[in-house]
Amino acid sequence: MINLVRRIISGHPEWTSNLNAPLSVMKMSTPTSGRSLDKGKVLLFVFEPGLKVPTWCVKTTRSYDEAELIRRNYRNLSLLRAGVDNSALSDLFAKPLFLYDNKETIFCIESVCRGQIPSVNQGVLDLVLNAYEDWQVHLLSNSNSNKLWLVEDLRSLIKDTVSSFNHEDMETKKIIEYYDTLLKGDNVMLPALTQHGDLTPNNVLLSGDHVSIIDYDFIGISTLPGYDIFNFILKFHCYDVSFRAICERYLRRYFEKIGVKIVSLDVLFFAYYILEIKRKDCNIYKKSFEELIAGFNSLMIK
Image (cartoon, rainbow, N blue to C red; front, side, top):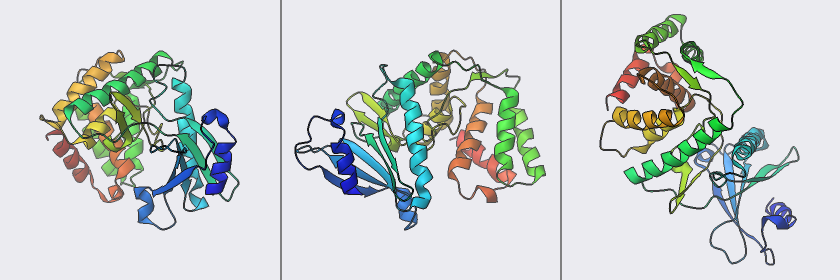
């Protein structure tokens, strides 16, 4: 496959002006692939002659049975790029360059975002979320959609998500009743905005003050605005006030930028919490109503 990758890159001189010597390749498995010998992504970093930083990232899988991972990643990245090309945000994401799929082997070629995974500190939090918010404002200003998240939409989201946990109807009913106690009369009206879905410190690269966001497997998992910010702060683990206080600070700033006024964020916190545990927690099917609510309350009083 490596020789095929080299031939494809060499056949696209518009990608580079430096193809006079053999390309070098470094292989790396993703953390997921370590859980099973035949699952997960494999990354190949391709270096131009004489360069110490890779120019291209090739994503493939250990088994063709996992091919949809690559298709989804490439499709998601293509949608992201379509929304930022020819704008000041064009370097926020990688560029999708090529998808190869002969029904036996699959891989995609992307540009490599510059920078390194940052150390965790307050300055990084500000820098990353400012860049992210600029993207969300750009999406909103260029959107033709009239889709809004209303109170009933949030209730349906939570009900459908919790129902997918295979809970008994009574457990689901208790969770919806708990949700209703959080409403406090809010008339929620939020624009639907594509979320990255896995915005964590490990999926951000910094080069000076330039921010890039990588890993596109979960793009569009939700269009509920604020989910990414909640998730990023949840994984950040570096703030001198409570988790709730830091979320309040950044989410209110974010909502102000996208023109939304929210009296209480509690109902959104709960929706974000339910979405995130479904995405990441493989033991969620074993959790009772009491455990779910206790986990949420524990998080929000940190």
